[in-house]
Length: 108
Image (cartoon, rainbow, N blue to C red; front, side):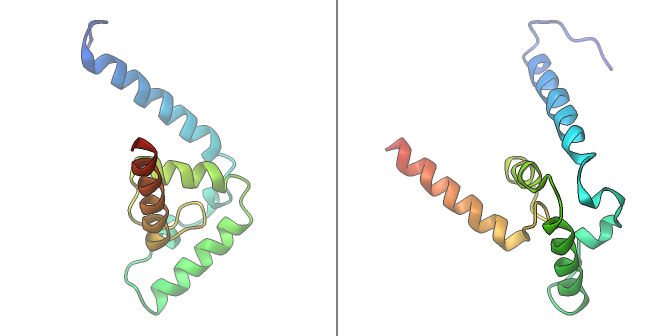
């Protein structure tokens, strides 16, 4: 990694990213999906086998002890595709809209 001066505006961002990655890795080790096929959580399509895969992925999430941090990670990092924290893409979109609407109302 290239040397960065302490006053470099990107230095603190890199440090934050590194901390976030460590925190991500900590809860990921406890995830029920850690030994599952990742493709199960990223179904391609919106019908047939893709729906079955998404349902199977959500069943894995249902027995997972870290669904809350997983969902928070997906929402905070903008993960648009896949099953995260027991939610699919449309469910996360709805959660983000609700959260953004609440933030706008509180800013008024």
